[in-house]
Image 1 (cartoon, rainbow, N blue to C red):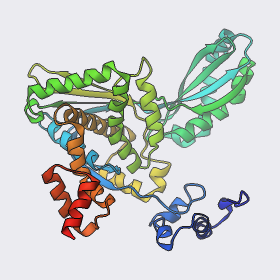
Image 2: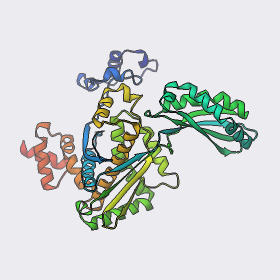
Image 3: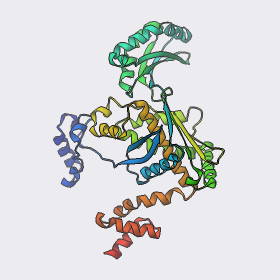
Image 4: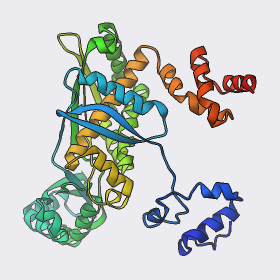
Length: 410
């Protein structure tokens, strides 16, 4: 590839033509990138040639804080939406999910280096806390008007020559990255003046420990399959508590649901992932969920984790599907969205644990995945459903068996 090619200087059509020639794409292949939102995407990212679509489905049966929700989920894995919906259906029997979200405080970090005396620098920053807060709040009059803005300051000593200043910023219904980063830039010179040190990094942290969301639900033992199943789920949970290899996949299952909602609403799933796993690792990597059994033998599940989401700003404002998905959710605040997200993650986790502890994860997953298996085997879409039924009936969901059935039908 010619290193002199500058895609960012080209129009959308020119970029497509260039990539088509360089990658030897067919006319049909280049058309895959011609989505309805391509022109909007061109304003959102660099060197855009089109859009990449994910299936968008709706998780049902969710009752959260007494309110029914339809939850849009953007995900390519067949079993995830069905599993979450089924878990939510079981949770409804005992009243659904109860969720809560902290106030939307994010942390902006300011790294201060080359200090003669870290302790003295700490005192000077705290002594001038009010001035620093007022200076930070000159950045965003609108945020302050709606009750947000920088509210407090923390100072952390890292070592003898370095400290970190944290700005605690109430972001209201925004995720807040732009506002927080702007504030850290604004106070840089003031902090250098007060400490005599040099400020290096100024940036938000995704470990949003003051912006967590929580949810719990009671799952009826009979709907789960009896108290024996409850006990098996608890043993599966204990495995995740005790073994980091299992815990990684345990938490990944939670994020299967959460990420799908975060993507569907135009929020930053990478930031949510970073916050989730770093929070899980704060005292040794641990499950984000917790399970116990009540006096009647029912399963009680809960979750707590950082959830820095927004309903205004960023892609939530620019992307029309994100706006429409938020309309489907009918949420009034970022806190409400955060509560939905963790409830969805809890449901997803329960569904996975139940499947693992009973029939095994693969059986139900593969039945839902069977159509993809058939199509991947070269089965035409118009007869895929017929072949799927045969594979499920015979409990043989493989590409080889799909091909075998197809040959017989032909």
